[in-house]
Amino acid sequence: MHYYRHNIGDYRRDTSHLSLLEHGVYRQMLDLYYLEDGIIPSETQWVIRRLGARTQDEITAVESVLKDFFMVGEVIKHKRCEAELAVYKHHATNSVANGNLGGRPKKTQRVSKQNLNEPNNPSNPSNPSNPLKTEDSGSAQAQTPPPAYLGDQNESEIPAKAKIPLAVSWELPAAWGMDAEALGWSPAEIIREAEKFRQYYVAGKGGGTRRGIKGWRQSWSNWLQNAEKFTPIRRVV
Image 1 (cartoon, one colour):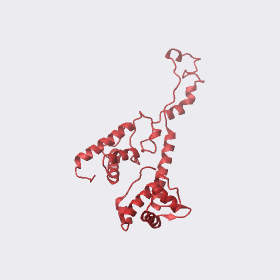
Image 2 (cartoon, helix red, strand yellow):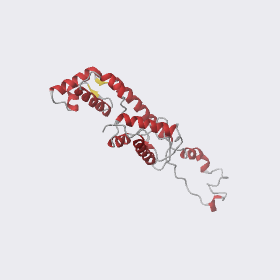
Image 3 (cartoon, rainbow, N blue to C red):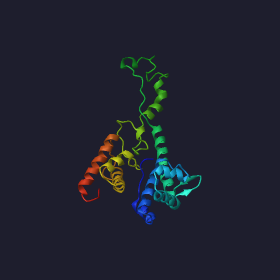
Image 4 (cartoon, rainbow, N blue to C red):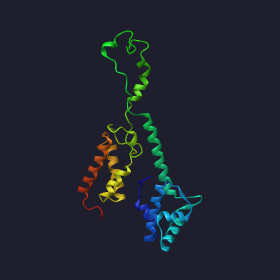
């Protein structure tokens, strides 16, 4: 998992007692936790090495943060992170299942109009042995439109040229979030704008809009440009 939501209010409420050094350790620890999908050995020395703690103050800060925010057993666990990972895995599982329901239409055998009406032609609709009669269900399935766009969860399952709407549970793809960060947007601002974007195209005036994945990414870029114009004083870079 390479992108996660950061609630500033919750974070400040739970970490007001931390020093600046401990804040840095805690944020690095959260990043490590998500990158490793919550599989963190309960060896403090392993964590210290992975975080790059070198001085005694840094090592003490790591030990303090582990004690305050993580449950140390056979593996190290964090309640909030586990909940976020569970939601992410649930969406990923659903997206795979949805993707398996659709797909690219299968190629069907071409039949010339001249021979179609011949009684003995297997493709003649009046011929009892017409194989197309037994393939109706398959043809209907092949014509099933691709699922709505969820984000990273099902992007690989959607044909490049398919025009699809945003799903109600759409989440900002990690790459799009990194694009916004590169332009100077903070994580909190990215999350806020992504939610506005989702609501506009799911239930707002843009509801029902269908675009290819590249088109949606361009729409996100345009959205940020417009937000920049209408909110000139919004952040400190």
